View 1 (tube, rainbow, N blue to C red):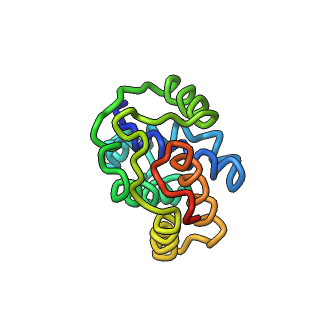
View 2 (cartoon, rainbow, N blue to C red):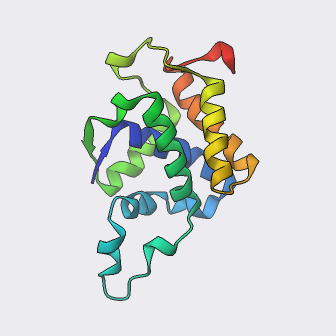
Length: 157
């Protein structure tokens, strides 16, 4: 499975949200990530497959919100693709959740304020009819990922 550093970071933030908001879905996160990378048309062609377009998984909705916001904030993170398998993905999600790292080329680069990230996530969440609590959890998770890496201005939280 190929994914960018930015996508991995977004999935890690989503994992931290799901851990408290939807523990059952959190347990399925590696499978959800893998399914998310497969086009729905390919899934639909499998015998006995469900219609992936009809599934309303919280993780999928959160990924759409978080990835669009983070692509605006840090587009370079989405450029370099990583090749990650399902088991490696689970280990990487767990490892990165405990200690976020900063790509050297982006160290000490302040791109956007926490408030801008929060506002963008709340707008997108409202469009998708997500609860304010879930939107706040996602904003907090993304900001926590990036604040330690100095991607955002911590003074404007």
